[in-house]
Image (cartoon, rainbow over all chains, first blue to last red; front, side, top):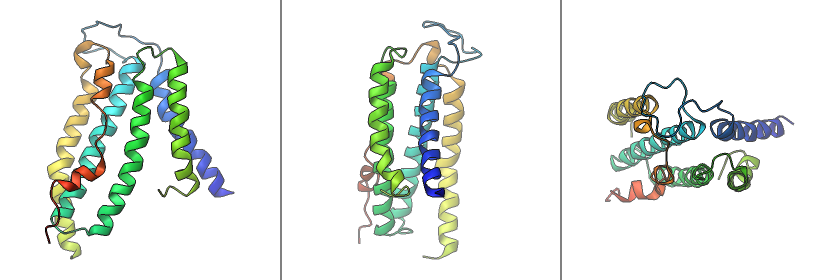
Amino acid sequence: MRKALARKACVLVILIALVLPGGCAGPASNAPGTTSHETAQDSPRTVAYKSLATMNKTYNATMKSLADLYRQKLVDDQVKARAIEYGTVFQRAYNKALDAAEYDDFSSISGVSVALAELIDFVQPYLIKGGKP
Amino acid sequence: MGAVELGIAITELALKYGVPLALDLASTWKQNLSGREPTRDDFEALRLADPATFFNAGDHGG
């Protein structure tokens, strides 16, 4: 029962994380072509970009750190294999989220929803297995 | 591998990658893409590399 609730919570968190920047971040206050760096609120598309850029940089720093530890022989081949295994799951899920965010017309929900559906289909088996690839 | 060695290595990594990461993230959220909307190419540039490539750059070597 608790596991099922945890799975639902995970799916909900993922959906919120993806949908909030994409569609519900509030009205766009900086129109295209705006040059001000001090806009009070970024457009949903810009927020999506920055969110993905944050994940991108975090992933790169994490993988570089693990690779460094491996080169220093502080972690073994088993840890390396697990890092690659989990990293692959994250990379594929992230790239699917990127597919959704790449649609030029952000207000057109059809392409975005197809990509999100693919993302959920991809992530679902890992949630069912308790987050293990 | 001792716990002390690992602790030192993790501290080094925090300094090597953690600090630049924090600065990078702060700058990402502060800047506004020079005031324009992100394009498809901007998003495409964010695509992640295969995790194995990070390790292939240098193996244990024995």
